[in-house]
Length: 120
Image (tube, rainbow, N blue to C red; front, side):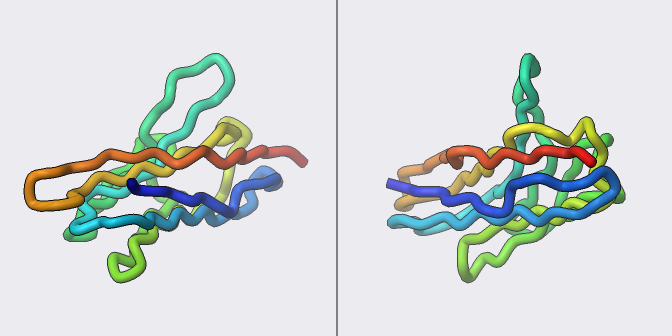
């Protein structure tokens, strides 16, 4: 019912920048939290950043000051600007969106994931 399409992953050099984008579509009534998670090989999926409907944001300590999450509520889109990317940032990045389909129906959807590789 809700589809998330991610883009922007790829190869980035250490210290470089990359921007991820995720667009949500479907019969969405309200979008609440939008966020990015990542999962490196052999590790659990972890929160990178999340932005609420009031645009307040939270970040993992490991990315504070270097990554910025933002949203365009009119387009149901969430962006993750990644600056000063370090090798440990290499992972599959997943978009997450929570909201409402109707007044009594909520949803929580995940994107398919986009790979971020960090290498010189």
